[in-house]
Structures are given as structure tokens and as C-alpha cells.
Image (cartoon, rainbow, N blue to C red; front, side):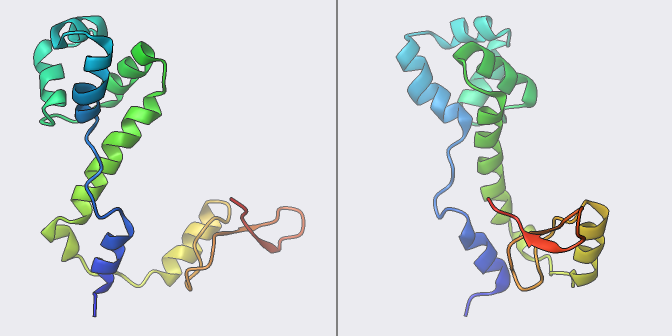
Length: 143
């Protein structure tokens, strides 16, 4: 039987999400017919920084994500989401992380629910609920 940690890890994709540098290297640069040096200059980055991102040795930071978004006409969040998904996948599989035991959180959920305006996941895994400001009743949040 799988442990709770293993079950949580399997919720994410079984494959490792792509690093943003792979997209730059394999899709963007060839489509632009642009050298790495030219792209680094255009973005205002050092060649070394861009090379490290392209070779998956360095993460895309908020600053670099904003530069990429401005250059390519998409959003900063697009580049940050790629990086976050890549990092989260690896972190969830880290042996030290998997050894962390769950803390009973029923009280914490109630505290967070009350402190942050009523959004919290139910103890049974129910969808988040909010307190109606008018009636004080709980209602399901519609996605």
C-alpha cells in the first residue's frame, strides 16, 4: 500500500516538467534564428547567465522572466510557472522532503479559515468554502 507521501507525490505529473531553458534552447532560439549571444544582449543579460539557464544550471528568476515576457510578448507568470512546476516536481521527490511527517492540521485550518476570509479546504477533502458576508453561511466556491 502506498504511503500518504507517495500518494501526494503521484498527484503531480509522473514526468518531470520541462525547465524553461529547454524551451529557450529547443524552440525559441531556432524559431528566431538568433544566436544565444544575440538573445543575451537583447535581454540585457550576460552570456553566462543565459547559457546557464539554457543548460538548466540556473533557474529563471522574476527579473529574467519579466525580460523574456517583454521580449516575446507573453507574461512573466508564464515563465515563472514553468520554473515553479519544474522545481516543485523535483522538491516533492526529494528524500529529505518525503521524510517529513504530517502534522494534525484541523485547528490550523480553522485558524487560517477565520484569519483569511474563509477560504480553506475541508478536513474531509471537500472543496473550499467561503463564509457569505451577508448571511454568515458557508457556500461552496465555484471554480
